Image (cartoon, rainbow, N blue to C red; front, side, top):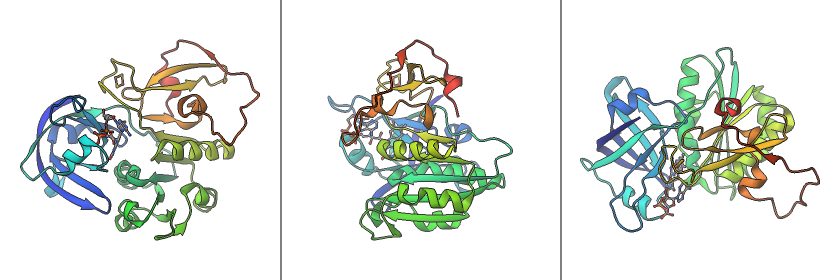
Length: 295
Ligand SMILES: Cc1cc2nc3c(=O)[nH]c(=O)nc-3n(C[C@H](O)[C@H](O)[C@H](O)COP(=O)(O)OP(=O)(O)OC[C@H]3O[C@@H](n4cnc5c(N)ncnc54)[C@H](O)[C@@H]3O)c2cc1C
Ligand code: FES
């Protein structure tokens, strides 16, 4: 993990989002898809904590070598400040952090599912998978066309692409889960990689569990230290036999987890529309077995 002061090379609009390119050769060199950086925003009573962002691109070759790109949705104080960053500004960045996506050497075909800016880390993953001759299908979904992340670039990058918007302004009307089953059947994907709002990740992970397809999800949880010290980012996971559960830290053991092992009801709350399950709840155990919950 590296702490560095990075010059801002550019700040561009990408639909509803901002795309920041930073000069960060040491981080770019080590970054893996699914990892993230923490960026300090100016100090003040409400902005003491660094803000976490997925790595969208880490360039090691060509004209952009040594640069890192992140994508941000300006929604609160910290992201609004970053959205105003200008070329030659300097940011205090820590990274690469966390554990990213993994894949087997013999993987043939996979499906990447991104919701909103959650598509950003999946482009980095798609490039790596394509470079290893894997077949890459992609579903990008969002509320409206402005929030679909880089649809044109995505079509160039992926072997197959499906776009969904809730308001029907681009692609198919609906959510990514409405097209998931059909896309899985068409592409023959052996693994699903997903990033987006946690409720979307839960729905994707549950569909994959029903179909018996492994699913890796990159989650978002509040993070204070980002370094494994404070446990703000705890995500409850259940044991393989479904009997015990324990917390894992999204910042060091995640943010990528095996979607079938997250105890979604405990983490996000039970869906109000559904009656509580009559199955007995798992018992809490203390088992810091990061490796067991890895995909
Ligand atoms: C691993 C990871 C990767 C992420 N990747 C991206 C990305 O690529 N692009 C992007 O736009 N956003 C991403 N987020 C969410 C982003 O970190 C928050 O939107 C951001 O911290 C909000 O800060 P704020 O000051 O604008 O909002 P405020 O609401 O003012 O923030 C107040 C506090 O809450 C925290 N917070 C608020 N929302 C979130 C959230 N969703 N996740 C974590 N902490 C939050 C802030 O860090 C801050 O400490 C990611 C979060 C995580 C955990
Ligand atoms: S944010 Fe502190 S342990 Fe994860």
